[in-house]
Image (cartoon, rainbow, N blue to C red; front, side):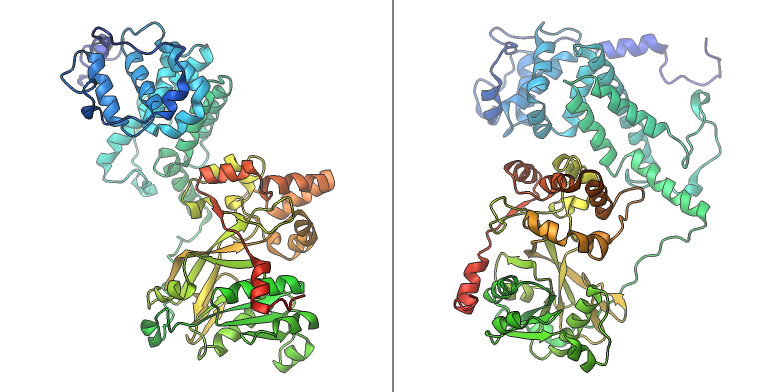
Length: 590
């Protein structure tokens, strides 16, 4: 017997009153003559394909209502108008199975929907309906494992709804963590010890156990694990708030200074920017390259056909044949970066190729202000893909912006040796959840940001004529700090042919692992970088291990295209690079 504290209980009448109130809302759904749920063996394919029309426009569906079933069916068809009939049937089954009694075949039909059409239902139903479904499994699962998993998740989501609703009265939004100094000294109810922000394992143990319980129940597993993933990824849950508080507390204990906001660094844009139009604007490209003649001509021809007024191509090592071929077009300025070039600058040749790239790009930015309004700094394996003329795109940039960022897409590698025509976006660029990356790349996705091997930051167009500015590889700096008056272009992407085929991937591997893009360490503590993964694969399985990685991440397959397309992460764009060479250089490339 509980101790009499003199306080009014939450539920006067105790558990008996609770049960009475609960049962009062569970009266069975009644039917009129001719009304019934469909049979358990109904063909689901037509239901998936049929879209629901507004029920008020259907005389057989519209009021007056002849039964509780009619009323509930009408309400659900209003909610699911435009959606699949299968989604509406799923809602009807849940409505029945919440009651005190139901048609005998309703539990089996509900379970059949999830056994046969889990992928479809997860795409068709919002999270609210998915939670309702997992709750229904808790009451009507066919196995102890299904009922245990459903009941556990139902209890968790029910408790969340209660405490998250109460928390709204704190004055903080769901994604706002409490300040560490807000904590009051008080005992928790039920003689519980408080959770340790830094060292507590309750959250991990709870989520991990729920995941493992679902593993043992194949029918509920896709639904249960999808909901657990959504719970982990949602930025407004207690798990995310606790993670934020943990990071703050760790900083405090480590004596770390509070993170400072990045200072505003507005680069002064020339007045002429406000007067530019698509007809008067001039843009160009600068690149420091080390490539075969064919690749250099493809790069130049593609961008000249897009309307580049000038190409500044620095050959990182002497390549007389390439220089001669490129110089045939007067819009291309070729600079050979030999010993005489560096001696003439009074500067020793820098060891890191990245430093040589930004040095050459910055010199061009400073010297071309009278001839160009915008300058793109990109590499020989990168190709601008605009939706409309680039001069129009740049003319529409707000006159106050000094920098225009270009979003990268990474090429998929065809098996037949042809040029890539399919490209992938990162999850961030596509506006989808980070968790989707591992669905697309199940083995290696967790180690690669957005599934990319190469850079995900993109490259930039910079306005010319701004004093004290210099290029970075992916940025523009003014007086040593990155400029903040910038925009991201929405009508042009940067196609990166980073690993356009298996042989190119292998040929560049050693350099990229030691001095190139793969050498950068992972920014996520405890996670492996690309160089770590490739090194382990090569050590353990040789070329076969590397091929496994390449096939999952880079190879252009119908399966990968379908996965990317389903998440909005696929871009299709044919490249006519050899045609561009023929047109621009009139066949003289041969």
